[in-house]
Amino acid sequence: MTPEQRALARRALGLPNSLARSSRNYTAVHPNALAFAPWMEMVEAGLATVEKVGLSGRVFLLTRAGAEAALEPHERLDPEDFPPIHAD
Image (cartoon, rainbow, N blue to C red):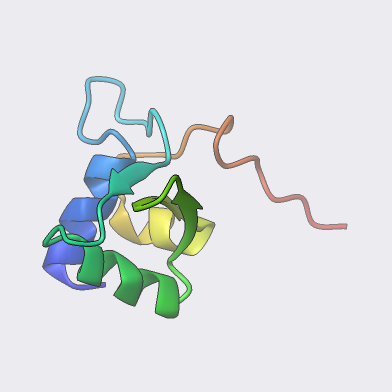
């Protein structure tokens, strides 16, 4: 994840904040926006997914791997957006 992608991912997670925990997992980006290409690179790398909204909008969501790569050591993910992984 590049520094630019990490900054975009942190913004999509609502970080930083006073709880040191993600508060969401999405961002809307128009295909003509400068942030579109870095997000598409994250999709190709398996760090995010993309959904088409309306005629031109796209909503990007981070995968667990993408979200974890964006965290600072003291931060954590909100279990509502990223449920704990249980080993069977």
